[in-house]
Image (tube, rainbow, N blue to C red; front, side):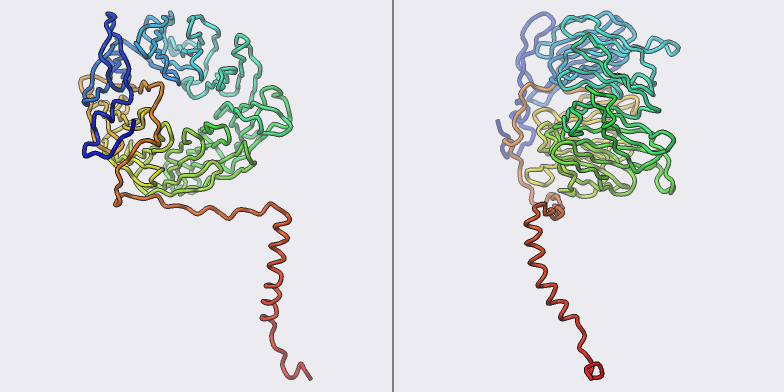
Length: 510
């Protein structure tokens, strides 16, 4: 189905791409509706739908919900209450399993949704725990003590096929488990301080050491420098593990951004201290490391010393980075870290690609005015813009036709709400939560999103355009081609040398 040019950008066809059948608790089938999303507030969990006539309807509600998680394939939804954990399937929203587990403050699914992980914290004096359950049976398969002050989402990773689980429950330790062998510990890696961890799917980080790997960002002993180590899972004690040293000292936080294709990785490093004293937010830097198709290692070009946001496209062929003082410099790079497009400088600090990677949303949230721009990479121009004041988060729908913005607690304790816009910037409807506190919102996306290439966007010749950045000249790698170039240059060099010779004077001739 395609969106055709029409005077009404919020037509019914625009919201009819996701049609699902919802079952009421009594078992009666409900009329097919629109897009479905979940909202967790002080009153509990509400599962709602955005209907084609731009109205919001309530499907299910669950009281006293403390945390919420959605599987990556959107096939299952999990939430926790004081009694335990409840698993729902997202087609009819019926309960799959109920697990008795108290004091759960955070939930997350594994990569394939085979396991659900619960973070338990009974009291500040007692040790927190991370408990892993099987989604289908609800049986507990492992339990690990968690001594970090942060939650499990920052230091818990699963491989793409759920074969391995990588966690850092302590500040100085990284543990790798084999999920297929009843969570048997395989590697226990220790260092001075673990800043960031990530699973590396590539098999070609080092030619003599087969993968897969896991990466650890850690400080170098007896120095203030920081490096990233790639440890092979099958031979963790191998001395040929790759190490990447960064040109920044006293790093406080680090974020590893792995490409969805696994061909490259970005390391976002932040230091709260600025030696020059020019920037209040400290010093940031971004490093690029190619894993497949080359060995490129470089520092990503940025404006100033502050990075606001950086995101890979879903296909891993490009990434966008917002840097510098406001108005920020917005540059799109290809998968080899070569700058391709420079978007118009604007007051933005938030970037999100649509599911297909064709559209890019740029927002100015937090301490900015809430301006949002929608860019189309096929047209290389702006599709539309809008303003969403006090927005905390914003996400694309799977159809890439509209976005959901939310004002959440505790960032904003008043005027909590959810607002929907289409990709042209037209406001569709607002779901207010003025009488309660809104904590979290999630799209419950469809199984088969529409192809973005079929979406027709109205042409606006006055819209902002992307500035194409010319790529650097390619290096000549063929030795025969180098010889031909040298041969062509020699005669020209001789002629220029003859011209530069000064004429002899009469005294020198005598």
